[in-house]
Length: 144
Length: 285
Image: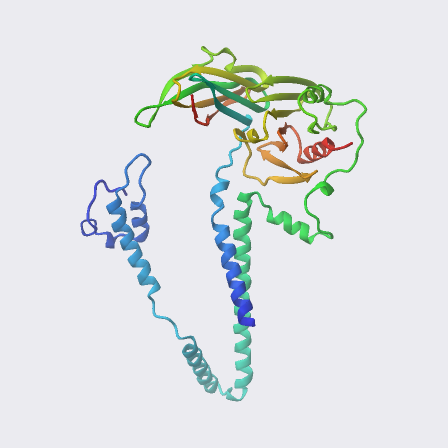
């Protein structure tokens, strides 16, 4: 009986040690920011090859400038690789960056090729009196 | 130490390298193709070494114990203490038991420390659990932890937000309690698959925001949203069968939850206590 309890205890300890070993990698995923609090970005197929890139950002406090500095659109090529086909900046889309706010939203449409896959990379940007921060996010992939 | 191109084990004299150096050879810089043959040779040497270590002769415990007893008896005789042998033997057995107990205790402590360190990655706070267990009463985190005071303010601090949310949903998602007096500014953004209602609350030196996102479908909840947090523990509060997650993002705290197709985030210059009382006040009637 005592031996059985000892064996059960040993097995339990071994089990706990195995569980304890693998979750550490997940902790490394956490990323904090003095500027950003929430992101949301996606690409949606609108039909006839047209796609929409939407992004939304909430900052921790009021920013003098908030939004995205650049948005890149990537298109899938015949060899399976993705190539950057379009770059948007504040010069081409005026409301990509907004002023004196804690929330910025923008929707950009792009005429792609029907049946081709696309995704976007959004470079978020936030600036206040003490400095600025960038944060890069990659959206989902859609077929236009 | 990086080796370009493949060389045989004998060429590299892998046997002469330490295991640590061999493990370094296994590393392939990002963007470079791994040298699979070299890796195979290195692994072979490492595994051979490990096999040698585990092939150490097994210890015959019984024989060792008998030998130990004999040596002790001889020593006891030499010290003219042979008549006290049974007592000494008992004492030695007692010391052995204490040693075994100490080892077990050390192992248990090691496992507990390991669990505490790693379980936090899952958002579990073992120390918090232990604190709960050692309190006079035990209860799970939930509504009982939250302030029960229902001093509903006469003037609704979220008048504009509540009106904007009411246009989109009947679900209770807007708090009733405000942590401090603040000016309210609400914006409503129509998105492709949702409506984003954003309230900013600012006083002279503090500010916070309440974001209410009403999605067209419950399937869209959380698929593309990222909330930033540091590596501290996420505190969960279950109210009305809804999990509310309180998290820290450096010097800002935020609370995130969803109720059916509505996602809510409150964040800013708030303490966890502010957030807890605010989320409790969402459900006050």
